[in-house]
Amino acid sequence: GENVEQHPSTLSVQEGDSAVIKCTYSDSASNYFPWYKQELGKGPQLIIDIRSNVGEKKDQRIAVTLNKTAKHFSLHITETQPEDSAVYFCAASMTGGFKTIFGAGTRLFVKA
Amino acid sequence: TAGITQAPTSQILAAGRSMTLRCTQDMRHNAMYWYRQDLGLGLRLIHYSNTAGTTGKGEVPDGYSVSRANTDDFPLTLASAVPSQTSVYFCASSPDRGAPGELFFGEGSRLTVL
Image (cartoon, rainbow over all chains, first blue to last red):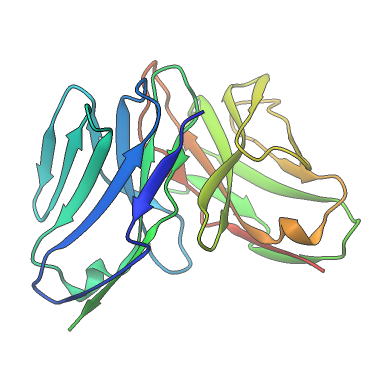
């Protein structure tokens, strides 16, 4: 089955700096790669996603890149703010699979 | 908008007792899921249901059962709880209109098994 690995497990940056979180997946049939943000005491919420027919997607300060050949995808947050502090999860799923498999999460600290 | 409602919010349970975690959605989504979240392990899929009347096993199904009698409800039952089932449990749903998409999560149920 699908396996998703996520690095780093913890990331600390200064406010205004960029943050990058990287994930790899194992099943070449996966074609949907979402990123979720989880704030303390809450359920995860989707912040951006990318499908396998696209290499990059941007939404304001957040961007995701996908390298299908290497089975890598990454989350980039620019101009970080204290409210970006949270746990971020990458995930992978495929059409008809009904299973979204998550990475272990990255705890991001943005220091003011 | 309620979205996904989970109950209870938290529970302490003696080992060997049974427990049902409740999950209701008001979005008329086809697919529903149960995940457990443990430190360092992320979110692991326990069971899922792609439509009312059908269920499937996820990554860590042992010790858990689910049912999907209707579109809105997807309860998770622990028949005989063990301490390793101490975790935060999240229910989620998705429209699942033929292609994978966003999961909508509840606020979680924290379960402690002693």
